[in-house]
Amino acid sequence: MTLNEFLNQLLSNKDIDKKAEEQVKYIHFGFSEEESEIDLKNFLAGKKTAGVKVKDWYEKANVKPPMIGDLYVIADFYGIPKAVARIVKVKAFALEKINDKLTKEMAIGDGSVVYWRKNRQADLAAECEKLGIKFEHNSRMLAIYFECLYPN
Image 1 (cartoon, rainbow, N blue to C red):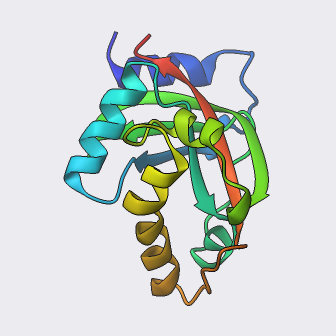
Image 2: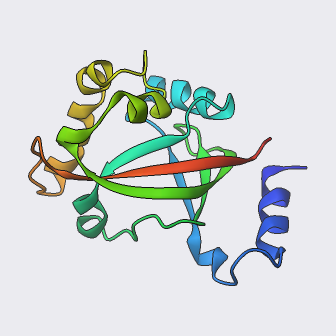
């Protein structure tokens, strides 16, 4: 079954809310081609089960924040759809409270907070700067947890 066939079947399933079509978002992981490839590989291997975003980013970017049950089509860096994920949990937290459990679930490098701060935090800060969001040690964040629906 192709990704599009899977998504069409999923959306027609009676277990999915009638507004599911509005809940489907298309995204890719990472801030570079290399990061995107690694993150997609980890997601498909079942290692990457979470991601984070600055909470204010959604409002400034005019994007609806993720909600439990939302569907994401995960694409590679070039926009080619590769997988479908469903949001299973969304948790707000202060950046200063990020911990090894969460960074391990994000499957970035060795999974440590130290590695994540060194290799990904600057990307989030740059993304915020583009939208005029002040990025600080106590910035409000959203941890987004997901499960892979396709392929499985």
